[in-house]
Length: 178
Image (cartoon, rainbow, N blue to C red; front, side, top):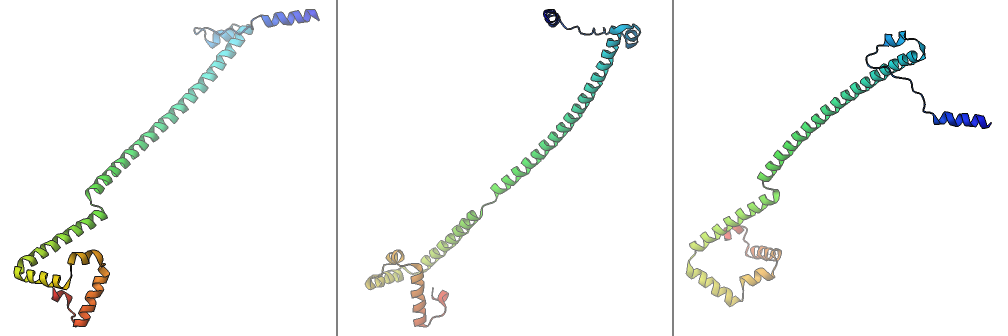
C-alpha cells in the first residue's frame, strides 16, 4: 500500500506529457509516414487543428455577417432619425411662424378696439362742444355719473335697463338711436 501511494504521488508530481505539436514546416503526410505513436498523435493534432480552424473561420464569417447586418440596420435607423428630426424641426419652425389661437383672438380684439376708438374720435369731432357741455350739465343735475355707473352696475343689468327703456319708448331700432 505504501508503495502504491508513493507511485501515485510521484505520478502526480511529474508534469503531464503533452503530445508534441509538429512544426509548421512539417506536412501531414510527413507526420503520418513517420510512424509510431508520436506521429499518429501529431496527425491527429493537425487534423483537429484544421477542424478547429475551420470552425473558428466559420464563426468569424458569421460574426462578420451579423456585424455587417447590424451596421446596416443602425445606419438605416440613424437615417430615419435624421429624417424625423428634420421633419420635426420644419414643423417647429412652421409652428413658430403661425400665431396661436390665443394670439389671433387678441389680435382681433385689438383691431376691434382700434376701430371702436376711431369711431369714438369721429363722433367726438362731429359733435358740437356746446351740446356736450349741455349734456354733462343735465347728467350732473340728474345725479348721474357715467364712470360710477360703469364700475357699480353690471353690463347685463345695463342691457336690461336699456331694453326696458326701448320698450317703454317703443323704439325698435337701437343702432338708429346712436
